[in-house]
Structures are given as structure tokens and as C-alpha cells.
Length: 426
Image (cartoon, rainbow, N blue to C red; front, side, top):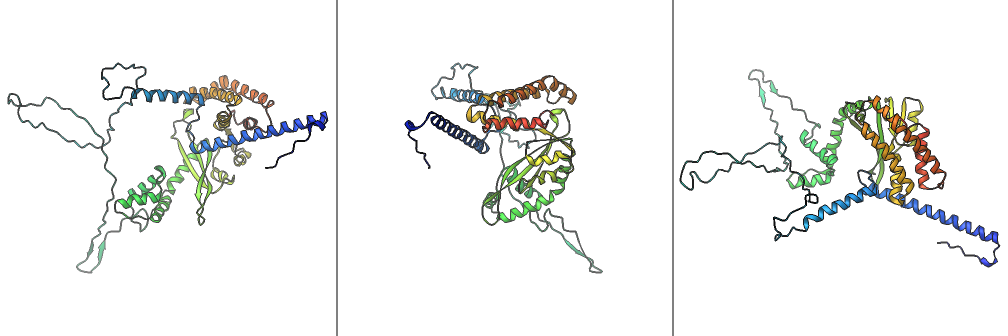
């Protein structure tokens, strides 16, 4: 660490002392900004790894956590066996147990009858007649198990000409593969929906006496993905045919062959969902993988799309708006997230006010969700647009009071940059 020697202050002139103070003050500001920026980066990384699904304000979460502690602590106060069962419990503070719902009706039922041991009245010996019955249900589980389907194709020969007749072999999902469609569906569902890696599946199957190597399972996954190509194409055509899409991408760690390390790929998501605008079309999402984040990927994915694209301010999307075949609609969630990070790390008053203003806009959107487009446009023009103009003026005024290098300035400039593109007003 390099340390500067403090000069003899008694030998310095007044101007030199002032210059020294200004220099030290600028160093302190720079260090303070660096510390704030590092804290913000740490908070973002922690939220990426351990983050909540929804970004609630800290006050609301603390209130809910306190309430949860109260609910959890109350039933333990009188839980001893010696406690009187007739103790009165305040229904306002009683622990609310989850309601027990009937078991799903689509499940098959196995009825077990439990007849009384007595064939006659135990008191007088009279004949017993049916009065009624009590029925209770218990949920049970039968572990999944393997079974083998044997395809037998008899060979028949003609008694005259010796011609051999035999039925054609049934088709298999994977040529010369031994896995049936049900097993392939189970392997893919376990891997992608239940996040069960192939090596763990191999261990589970081995406990049932079935040896399936991970390489075999991997070949099945690759073969099944080819079978699903027509379905993926149909999904892509359905998503791209919409007039408005939501686009985003997320980093995906991918094994780099040969060195045992991982590299960062990208999973692009294109969502068709206009239910908030009263559309009755089924929502759908199309996922596409790419080895990097170059702008050529969304350009290739959306070459057939025409309409409004709602996305973040990633520069790779800019070329899509250049020729006018797509209109940019910015994502308020990305704008809000930057202020949320600042509020969590620094308890910033500016960030907190920005979050409250955005929450008001969110409240208006919640009220008009599902209404016809004309009605939603009218409400937005009457109620939301004045709030948006006020928010923009507040951003511009606040920006003049902040350091150019602060994270709060970066968050405000991000929002104003989208405003200049007219993307936050669509």
C-alpha cells in the first residue's frame, strides 16, 4: 500500500493549505463512491444467488417477518401435554392452520371395507341392519417402477411356396433405442422440470436394478430434442405471430468441453402474453440458447417479427428498431430494479421516492389489467401520464444535485435515456 507523507503544515502558504484540503476531500469522495459502488455490486450478486422472487420493499418484508414470528411463537406457549384443553384462545391471535382440502377427484380410489366383527347385536342378539357408514380418505403413493414391453412378431410361412409373412417392427422414438416414450418423457421431465441431473437419475435407476449410464441418458436427451423440433417450430411461429413481445436474456453456465470449467452462455426468452390487455389468446414463451450475448442472435431470432418489442436497454436490441419494423417499449421492471438495489444497499432517500412513484404507476396498471385497450389508454392518459411527466421532471431536477459518477446518477440516466427514445410512454 502506497502512503503519502504529510508535508509540514507550518511551512505551507494559505493557498497551499487550501489546495491540500481540496485534494484530500476529493480523495475521500472518490473512496466513498467506490465503497458505495462495491456494496451495490455485492448486493446485486447476493440477490442473483439468493434473491427473492418478488422485490418487496424492506419495510413491508420486515412487517411480514414480525407477523410470522408472532404466529409461529404463539402455538408453542401452551403446547405441553399438561395444558388444559379448555383454555380460551383469542381468535384474533390464534395460529391459522391451513385448511384441509378434499383429495383430488381425478385420483383413482381403492376401497377397503371394514365390517364389524359382530354378526348380531352384542346386547340382545338382534339382527343388525345397515344404518349408514363413515368414509374417510388417506393419500398413498406407489413408487414409479420399470416394466418391459415385449414385442413378439410371429413368422408365418406359406405351405405351398414357402413365402414368409411377418408384421413390420413397431417404430421406436429413437432408432434402435431401448427406451419407450414414457421413459424418455420421465428422463426429460426429471432433468429440466425437477432439476435432477442425469448422473443422479442413473443412481436412482440403479437402486431398482436397472443400469443406465449417464452417457446413455445423454444420448436419449439429444435424440428426444430432435423429436421435439417440430413442436418447438410450431411454438416459435405462434409466439412470433403476436403483435407485441417481451424479450429478455439470462446468463447460463455451460460446461466447456475438455477443461472441466464452465463458460457463460445465454438463454433468450420471448414471451407472448397480452392477457393484461384483455387478449384471450393463450400465453406462450419461446426459449433459445446462444453461446454468447452478441446482438446478432436476437436479430436472427426476430427476423420475422413485426410489432412492439418490450425489452431492457441492451444495445444488442437497438439494431432491431433501426428500420422501423419494430417499436421499442421499455421495461419498467428494469428501471425499478436499479433503484431497488440502491434502496437496499444505501437506504437512499432518492431511490425510495423513485420506488414509491413507480409503485403508484403499478397500482394504476393493476386496476386496469384485463380491460379493453381503448379503456386502458384513456385511464393511462388521464391518470398515469401526468404522473410520468412529474416523475421525469423530478429525475431531471434531482440529477443536477448528484455527483456524475454516483450509482444513483446512473440509475436516473438509464431511465431518462429510455424517455428520450419515447420507450417508457408506450
